[in-house]
Image (cartoon, rainbow, N blue to C red):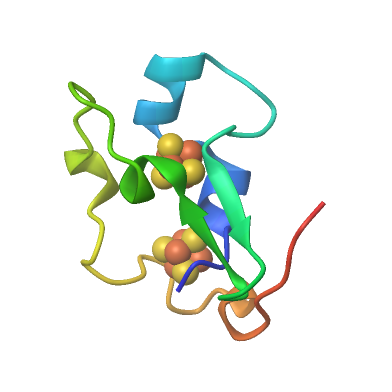
Length: 75
Ligand code: SF4
Ligand code: SF4
């Protein structure tokens, strides 16, 4: 759903391997038109970067997370 909670709370292993431990994953994009977050690696795949662990398209892993019902750009 693109609420951003997972990526803001705990950047994934792909982010760690590409960028190290940063306060905020630089691949997390807010789309003003869609009103949700996207992962840039999914929108613009990079050769050699394995995205299997993101499980994109498999559904939300935190269905009780209240952020899902209130999509907004988090600072
Ligand atoms: S690489 Fe993509 S899925 Fe992983 S933390 Fe960053 S924005 Fe989220
Ligand atoms: S809580 Fe669900 S909708 Fe929000 S970032 Fe995580 S998987 Fe996506």
